Amino acid sequence: KDKEDKAPSIDDIKEAAFQKGFLEGKRVGFESGSKRADSVIDSLNQILAQLENIRQEIYQEIEKEVAQLALSIARKIVCHEVKTTQETVTC
Image (tube, rainbow, N blue to C red):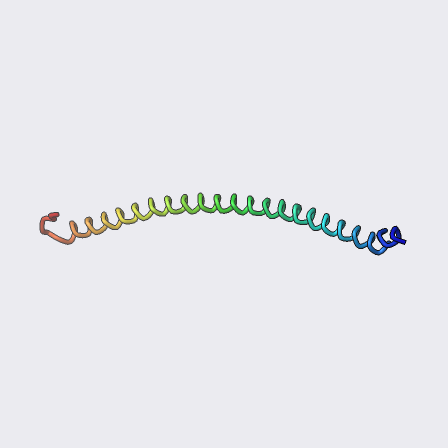
């Protein structure tokens, strides 16, 4: 009778098999999800780097345009003053 008490029942075997399968599926699913998340994170980091490069290019271009605009405005002011003022322009 001791052998019968110690032998696992069919339900115990089913439950153990279910738990083993569940845990293995959970592990595999986590690894798969983790790999996908890593891939998405890598893609997002690349996109952020590209956006930073674009931002720098735009900033440099705007900086040049603002400098050119300032010079153009200064020229117009100087030309206007030279044309309208008979006095000597001094700095």
